[in-house]
Image (cartoon, rainbow, N blue to C red):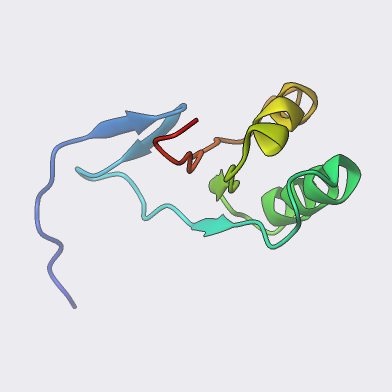
Length: 86
């Protein structure tokens, strides 16, 4: 069996990573963040198949404004990718 390297435990939005915690599954949405319905639907589908961390790209101020509607979901984590200019 493969020996896991000991790592410190980090809490990422309620998901414990590292230490003796199970490996967490993470991915990124493929939808355009401005399409709120499609993004929310994809997050729900990913959650249903066992994904723990979902990242959403936020490259513009327009997409950043969409986060208010998307973050109403209680069980996912946003890893926003904002350009330094925003």
